[in-house]
Image 1 (cartoon, helix red, strand yellow):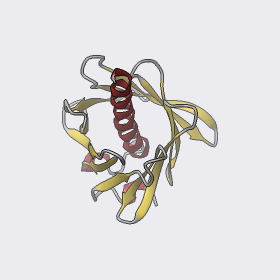
Image 2 (spheres, rainbow, N blue to C red):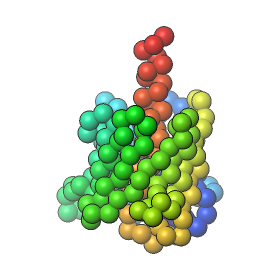
Image 3 (cartoon, rainbow, N blue to C red):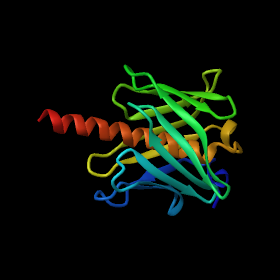
Amino acid sequence: MRLAEVVPRELEWVQPSPWRMSYELRSGPEVVATLRFLRGFVSQALGQSADGRWLFRRKSGADAEVVSCGARGACAVAAFRADAWSGNGRVLMADGGSLRVARNVWQTRLDLLDPSEEIVARYRSGGLVRCWGRFQVSPALFDAPDLPWLAMLGWYLIVAARRDITGSLAKAS
């Protein structure tokens, strides 16, 4: 099922097993997308849906890159440029467009905002052992061709931030 068919509803990101870095985006009981962190590559994840496949990877620091894994080979789709102090940043798309990424101080909410500062997608996350989240999309993105990888990019950024925080806590103890 394509993401555009289910986005009018609030969707849920779930982690089926606390032992695997694998996540499912669900509409009710139906899995509409997956994001799986690759073994041995802490910063790389493969996202899949009926719309396509994308590779998410860190470039340097908190900056990330989205690569389409289409039938015609891999090509860059977007880049995330992080603000080192706030964890916020900007998604720069290959077509020249951009979205601002805004997080709350607790890193439990992430919003994607268009150039007019309207929220086009919102993620809320939680969970201690298993990470979970809610995903909402504004009507402005319902038919956007970028919707599938944007749905996964936001979740990738949330999981990566959680990993950074837990890694820092483990080193401090």
